[in-house]
Structure formats: structure tokens, C-alpha cells
Length: 108
Image (cartoon, rainbow, N blue to C red; front, top):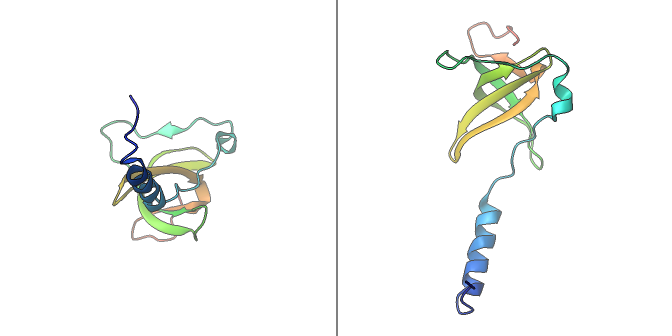
């Protein structure tokens, strides 16, 4: 089934507008950065630790977001946070994450 030539330009323009409106995905660490220790995941049904995480983006400055840690090891932390477009997750260096608590100095 082909596309209608009558509406092709309209749909091409709509598609281009949607792509332009989509934000770039955050930068995540490659699996080689994880090291040899396995990721420890939070068990289903248990509460995930609330954290502050520095998230880097390809074409904008890094930002500190309130998130939850879903898994970690001695090198990296997998964090998850909500946006207006849904839930995002990314793998960041362990030192880019701190617990959200009264004790600001407690590093994760």
C-alpha cells in the first residue's frame, strides 16, 4: 500500500516537526565502563533509594535531577527519573550520584 501523493508533503512536514520536537536522549555509559562486578538490582517490591544524579546531554549542559537508583555496583549507578514525556533511565558514574537525604555529604 502506497502513500497518497496528495498528502505526502503534509505528512513529511508533520514527521519532520515531530522529530525536531523530540529531545535528544541523555548520555549513558557504555557497558565497558561497568567493570567486572555485576550490577546489584533493587528487588521487586522494595523501595528504591532516592538520589540526586548528574545527567549529561549531547548538546546541552549537564543537569542535576531528582531520581531513584535501580541498580549499582562499585563503578556505576543506574538511575531513573520522570519527565513530562515519561520515565527515563541512564547509567552514570557512581560519583555523579548522591543520596537525597538530610545528610548532603552522604555519597552513594
